[in-house]
Image: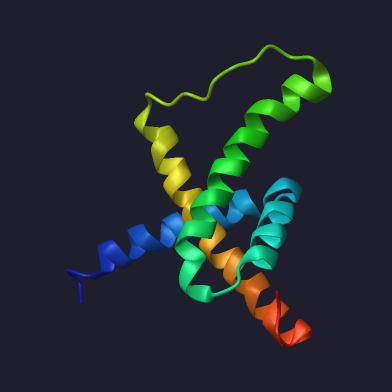
Length: 111
């Protein structure tokens, strides 16, 4: 068990950080919309990936549109940025799953 524990801690950290990033207004709105369009749970991985892409695009474009700020690309050459995207993906997996369960329970047939 002592050999497996560091890997479990590492994986848990990704889920914790990702959930924290998704737990903002923008992330929750994207997760709700993604859960609404999720027809079959087997497509959760693709939908969560789309949610991450949409989240990154929104983070880049909202300051440009709302505040007339300069267009700036995210730091795609830094490994820490990719690690944060993986954590964000893990967070979207959790949150979209929760909203999907609520959708299936409340709407009884869903979308």
